[in-house]
Amino acid sequence: MVYITRKIEFSAAHRYHNPAFSAEENRRIFGKCNNPNGHGHNYVLEVTVGGEADPVTGMVLDLKELKEILEREIMNRMDHRFLNYEVPELAGQIPTCENIAALIWKLLAPKINKGRLTRVRLWESSDLYVDCYGDGAA
Amino acid sequence: MRLELTRRYQLAASHRLHSPHLDEAENQRIYGKCNNPYGHGHNYVVEVTVAGEVDEATGMIANLDDLDRYVGREIIEPFDHRYLNKDVDAFRERVPTTENFCIEIFERLKQFPGARLVRIRLEETGHNSFEYAGQRNGDEK
Image (cartoon, rainbow over all chains, first blue to last red; front, side, top):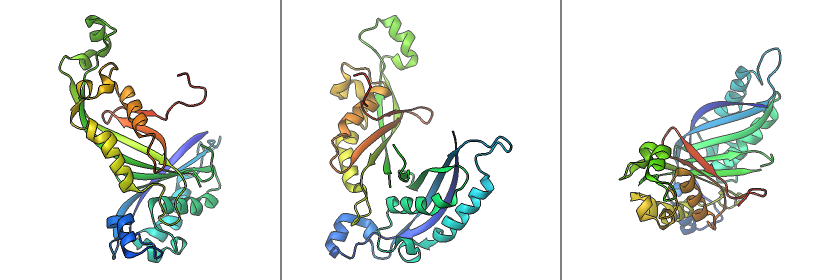
């Protein structure tokens, strides 16, 4: 098995707010992330696909294809968007790094037909990232 | 959905690699410059990885403020801007290699109540790093 990782960057805004909580609770739990008009990050996404190298092409999958999938599924959906309002798949969820990484996994896993999606690593900033492994074993 | 959250922290500390079980010549041969008598320092980067269920109400595995406070109290406060050999009890007898430092950090954080500690990855410099995930089944003590 060999693993191939492609990295992309997108910029997006979000806000942490749970309407079931009072204003004080939202403030206490989410802190600055609860500021009313949101804030943004330069997200860095690393997508890792595992598989066997094709004996003819020497590739697990064609990076061009992976690039197109990422463009279509992630960049078009999330880049320069306000995640709470413009990404319907996140409706009703707090757009934390955990939930965005899980959504990215769900969007990409069925689209990657050569090799298998192994890991989604989403950096929110240089000191915080979340890894998603789908339902894969530890 | 299996998710792990990793937070990176920085701390600056000094250490000297010197084993009381070895004579001067052996210490010098094994540890080289790291055995110089007054110690030297690094900007360490500590990566703390936790796992758990994502709370539907908050969207989080662990509240970052809680994690930051815990790491601040257990790791940053006792280690940052310290001489590990003299300022940390655990390293009076144990050589403060980054292997041992990594294990010490894991042991100090494994009781974090907010989520399950998965692993510690410790960068001594930008060129070398160490990982510890606790004792696993089959590991020798």
